[in-house]
Length: 274
Ligand SMILES: [Fe+2]
Ligand SMILES: [Fe+2]
Image (cartoon, rainbow, N blue to C red):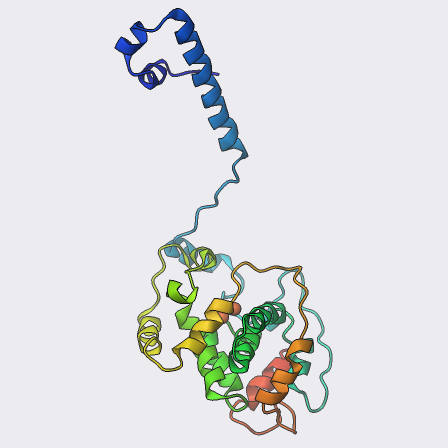
């Protein structure tokens, strides 16, 4: 191992200090110095390489390297290989049918969030909001808070809708008093120097003063930013909460002539060409 003579002498207090040391003390000091340097080198080699977060501009530059846009819904693009044939849904599909047959890429994450909310004693309206907060990403990711709230608006309470709609804006703003820190995941996904768009900032300023702020904030607190692919989750603990708080239309989701019926039909048959 090479040693830098000047650094070694400086570590002992300079040339004058060294000149006052015995030969034996100098030898001991050199051995100690070399062993400390060796430890530094080994530690640096063993440390996991900290992948730097990209900048927003670097992410922007990747747009033309992709065949699909980042905001495309999960149902419309395969993560690898080709998309799979989807199971035929029942004639009068219920929310639980969509969970088991269409929300394949988002249900695990949403069930983990709802499980966390249930265990921490959240209200049933907040648990339901956590259960539903990201499932609209099966059709679109852009502005998924707004899209998601619209998808559920005819069927759930205002508190649940409010929480789903605004969790999207609140996730960019830390609230340590309520247990929410800005997640590293967003430094990776949006860039470490990302600043939310003005409409997101204006939404945050409105929501933080709103009486339902707590409901929306709790979706971000119970959201998960490090996904556990092996987590054992089940819809079963939420079936009663859905029964109490989700107004299931008897015609089936997609067939009740509501203002959002077409959104449910799009989730049911994403392979329709037009
Ligand atoms: Fe979300
Ligand atoms: Fe989420």
